[in-house]
Image 1 (cartoon, helix red, strand yellow):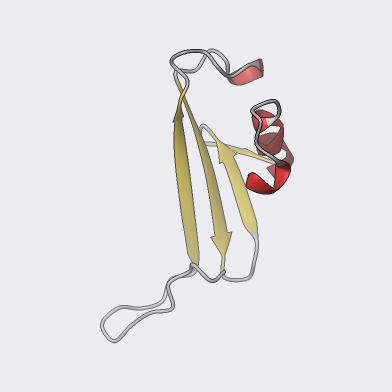
Image 2 (cartoon, rainbow, N blue to C red):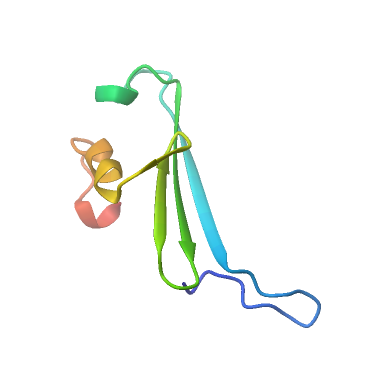
Length: 80
């Protein structure tokens, strides 16, 4: 919630923030259900009340789904 804009003298506060990462998978490095995609986008949206919503390629998913996508990449679970 620290990243949600609180407003300024000339702009009103907003109720949510989001970040989206797009990964190039043209080399087919990903396995599983997203192996066929040339790009895979991961998005997280957080609201002021602390609720998070996660998306893979625009489809709503669980945080666990994103974690499973990264399994085997060599990143630790705290890196996600």
